[in-house]
Image (cartoon, rainbow, N blue to C red; front, side):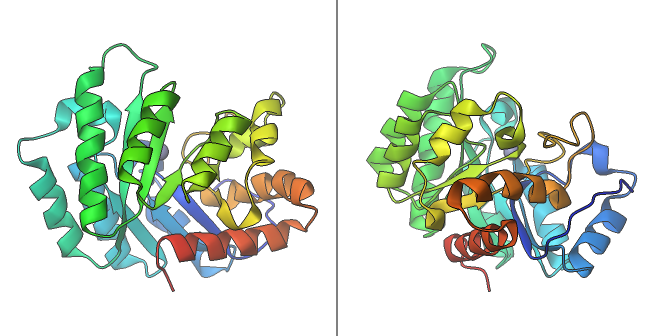
Length: 263
Ligand SMILES: [Zn+2]
């Protein structure tokens, strides 16, 4: 297991993908050790399709501090079966530890995913979330205007994750009553835009996340990311809020528990 010098406790990783094959060789060992020594208190798995949602439920049954969302990521558009809203409904009713619908949203970075279908998939899942009173975990890449329009139309509770937008976009999301999640991107050398956007985010609307195994923060670039590395994001963000990294970790832990009704 990779050595990670995290001096802090009670991390809440609000966005992870522990079903990724990069965790196949040591997934259970890694989760057990992180969740038992106090460094990581909670992990939220972001579902991307039915299989991934089922994985999240299985791991939520095995680890008390592991929670999950279920939903279809815009890149999973080719795997969406007929009656998918009913199928997601079945997953929701399977476990009390399904605490969100996600990750859902729009990704216009690649041309291969039909935009009209993405829009209807996103909208259907926003309606599903509201009908179950569950928050959403929103993925938005190069699709800010359409994302904001749908969020304004349906006004879900939730978080826009892996935020990479502008200060003004962050302000709009906050004004909708939503939260904003930041990843290791905040620690990168070219993080100027993300750091500026952070200024629009009040401390009670901030979430920390890894999006692991992707987005390893500075100091671990090129390595497989895991939830312990959130401390690097906390170190950078806490300077902006003029508090200690541990205080920032505690506040974002509270925020995530409030949003996802945990604990
Ligand atoms: Zn993700």
